[in-house]
Length: 117
Image 1 (cartoon, rainbow, N blue to C red):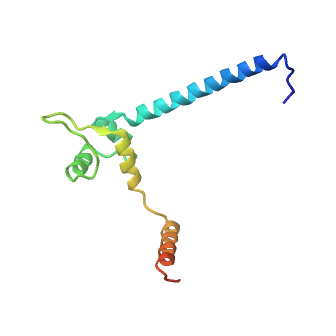
Image 2: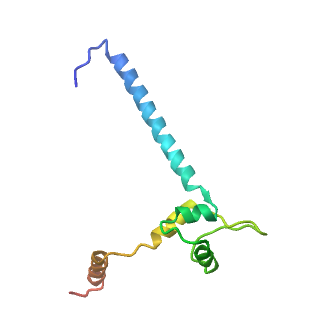
Image 3: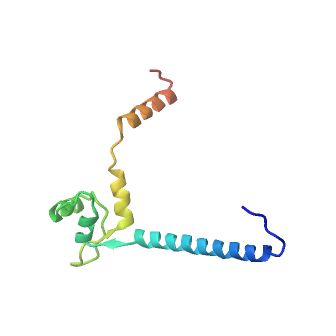
């Protein structure tokens, strides 16, 4: 990093301000894109393609009928719709804990209950 002269300072500040504005615009655009993606709606086919296991339509209808998957349906014969943000959350709730996570939780529980190992 070189030292600036007094004459170079206004131009350097102007460049810094422009770079900061560019960065802020890029960051705000990324946030807008993420929010738009989270508010995305899937139809049945899109949901099946998005799901990591690529379930059959019959499997998805089974989940819907048992209330296992979040879905939206309006009155009448409108098709099922799935909100991406809700599906993402639903998929995350199916995570199985590792043995080390279970052991750590057990140890923490025993510590808080006054037990010892």
